[in-house]
Length: 283
Image 1 (cartoon, rainbow, N blue to C red):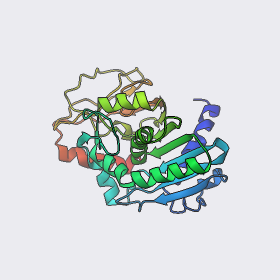
Image 2: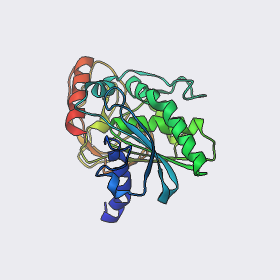
Image 3: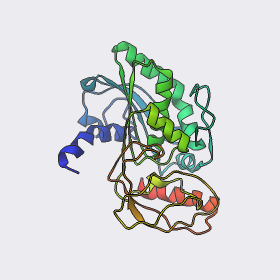
Image 4: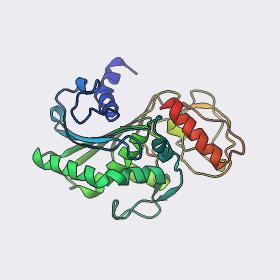
């Protein structure tokens, strides 16, 4: 990837990083200084039970921005949110008209639901104040999962004249195949940046029921989805995922060469503990 291309993602990285900062409300953090024109409108979350978030105005882009904090290794409840890997249908009150076959992980949905109403109110306020029509939702790790759900939430609860863009870094698997298909169809401007050999984008893990070919390092691999059972027997391998529909949630995947775990007869409890270890070591 060229330096010029990487530089275009720098503002997004700063916006994602700022969500971790306690001073985001005054926009005085180190990451905030790279975007001095940005104005924070609303903030919330405690960094533990409720991940931190902010809503603000990016004047140079005429865009309302929503940022979500990712996993905080120092806070147990944040880690437990990541560990809730059971999937359920989306809330009909937050996601009206969505089929019951569309499912996402409970921990991610709870984290998004806890802040959805307040964030939507902030977004609507800024759209009205600035007569704006663009919303950018952004996040890293757990924050990326919440941002993905928020992007769909905004799409379904804001006027059709408002465009929604999502940018995520190190996005874990958010939902099932129907969820991925819905994201692909509804959020057409979705950028998913994955660092090489980052393990978070492949957790929660896959079951042994999937037929995934053994491919040499660097070979294109198929999109993969998160399904769950009490066994994981796939051998470790390093493959390069192409930008592919069906990733949970999908979008453009940058530098997506990743390593998979080798586990045999792994219990669900062990999977949860591995997930926690990975979150602490690789996010």
